[in-house]
Image (tube, rainbow, N blue to C red; front, side, top):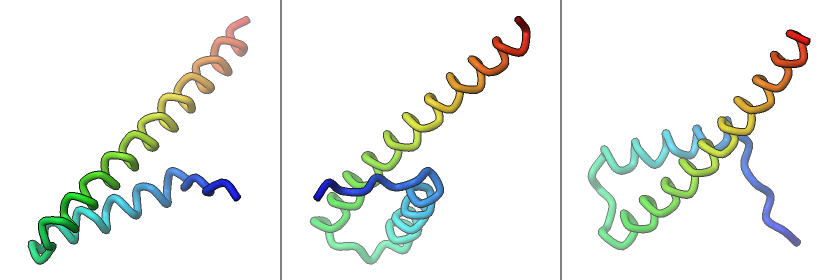
Length: 66
């Protein structure tokens, strides 16, 4: 069964949680490494979603100009 990708909101919420955990300073080094890797994955996911939406909006706006 393929893993469900998070929505943009879910990814941002997870990122906020990770940042709060890191700022708390109580994470073990091994866990910190895993959290940073997860944050990197989530940031890429958000960036990709934002890029896709930006392209879709530009396309719609171009169609309105025609």
